[in-house]
Amino acid sequence: MAEALSPVVMDLDDNDQSNNSVKPNNKNDKGKNVVVVPPESKAVPWVEKYRPQSLADVAAHRDIVDTIDRLTSENRLPHLLLYGPPGTGKTSTFLAVARKLYGVQYHNMILELNASDDRGIDVVRQQIQDFASTQSFSFGSAKSSVKLILLDEADAMTKDAQFALRRVIEKYTRNTRFTLICNHVNKIIPALQSRCTRFRFAPLDSFHVTERLKHVIEAEKLDVPESGLAALVRLSNGDMRKALNILQSTHMASQQITEEAVYLCTGNPLPKDIEQISYWLLNESFSESFKRISEMKTRKGLALVDIVREVTMFVFKIKMPSDVRVQLINDLADIEYRLSLGCNDKLQLGSLIASFTRARSDLVAAAK
View (cartoon, rainbow, N blue to C red):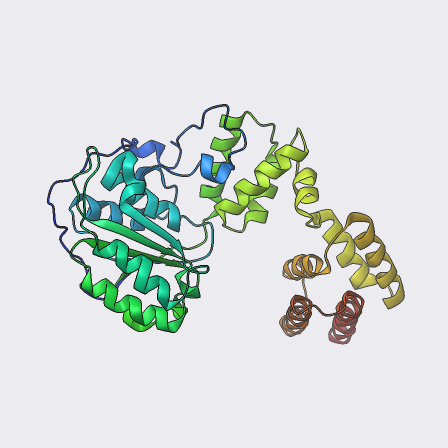
């Protein structure tokens, strides 16, 4: 959903609209057409090989994409602030806008910076200001004289750099449009937010992830049963980049991309393993549970943090009083947090089993 914080829509210097280098697709083909990389480019990551080439190709967030497409067509493109989780189409949308404005020569008219690397005030004063202050020029069929600057991971910029960027944006609005991309919008100072039109890119729903994966599977002629496709969608958690990376890495490791192959490649515990672990936690003694889970963990190379995360999701499927469920989930969240800080696995496995032992006692007490 778009959040227009201020009247920042602006007319570009040239009213002529450039020809698109990629013709828009039919409405029924949205999210499916991609640039096909020549056969010799087998080493190209699929996230780049199948990156959308035009705004019509972006699979999801049609309300956002259509709004940006209309503003671009009307030469009224504002400064943009695109935020949301990784792999949801933020950078692809910016690059599609660049292609729409400049065609195949778009690289000559944009400045891309990863703000997590180039995050200080010197970058704003030198690279950004130097690029923004130079005379605009056109390439090929591109007639728009406005230039684009992309600051990816802008939430990693220092506060001083953000304050310096605020003035640069104001000074060079006539010939330059800025796009800030970040995961956490609260780390962007209000002064910058107010100068941009904000768009939130939510995690992709399973339908759009599935459709794009099916297109890639068909294009690459892969052997993927329904269970394998469902595993890819489940593990992606709405991150298209992650889904394609898992698909490609599993394909390199296995001819058939089954559910088990996907889980083995990513190191995630299989659903049947989580069911078995949950059974031990709910029915076996402390020592027996500790022994069996440790053996499975070692044998299959599982990370305890992944086990805790999956067991937490499994708890939602178990019938139990709401107060017992809430307490157990809170305990599991504490364990996951401690594991993220590097705490000892054996101690946290003991905490996991103790949490379920207490939940079992509460269930018995509730039944009486």
